[in-house]
Length: 447
Image 1 (tube, rainbow, N blue to C red):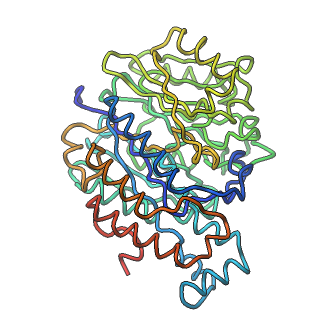
Image 2: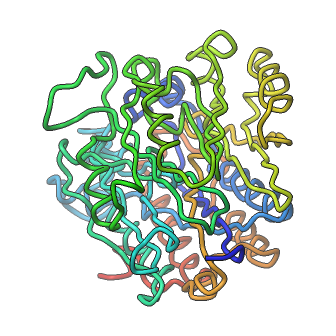
Image 3: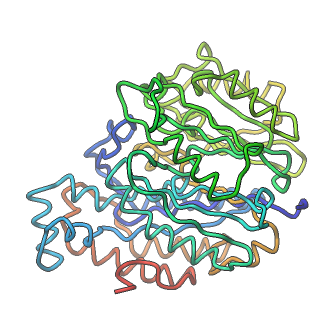
């Protein structure tokens, strides 16, 4: 493949039921902000602002729609009966945590949507997708069916795109998508090496964390590599450092980020740092550029609280890279000094840092990197996309107006039982699928 290949960041649109339910055990920020009043409109507009600024800076930007929430079908499957208002009222009284779960807007973090292999690495010359099963938490387990339909609607041309079954939703094949997968290469169109990071081995005894659960198994990562036809020479499987998981590093993208030949990582990211780097060097056609941040410079606690490593690392035409960090990095003196002294002044391609306000997402435990699914696409593949999903000025304006029409500026956990909120959400999503031109992808549209 040639230089016509561009990486497109598909950001998740924040859904109308964005709230702080504290559902993600092991996600320190999510647990800390449980019960706060959320602002869905501000959250969605913050996300759109980040997308627009990167588009205007010359980066290819796409959008992914949110899930249908509340998921009343899930509540009915669990025994709640009656009309929508009755189902919501009974769930609020008898199982408020279930109600919070089926209202979660967690699909905004599209790094968890799927694992993607670009056509440059695939033997059949197609882009391969596997939607993540997200089985480790109930509120995210509800997402994969709709995610798979959305991806199939957007990447619908079978000449260019291949879609694989979601892995079995069992602990042995726990899969959290691209949050635990990094592709390293020269240019985006050159063949790459796939770094799969896992928390535990399901069928074998490896030391794991003791405080918080793991989200990715070795077996799940190996299965996805097989689905996508990746060879041993194209893959590296590395275990996360258990101490990091217990410190709140629930995904690898909270402690490491890669782009092109650069791997920016904390020294506590991997159980065996040297073996991981050696394996990458042995397989990569381009020299690996490791950018190591030692614990002495940034503690695990500061890494988790600021999401320094949950940043976007983007390639520029001149070979330099831009790091997009959340505002929390600038507010932490130690982390900001490390960015200036170690990253910007160091021997690496990172030449610029952009600071973005994504506080509504950060309070639920998701930074800039969580908000996007990276897909390297050739010009032909971009032209083959279904619908209107690549951001331009017109689409940004339409989406902003859509948010302002349909989203509330205040939402508490108690508001989730409001049947009017459910109706507002369906109305908004029905309009969104028409705006994006992706057809009927939601359960209520398929009934």
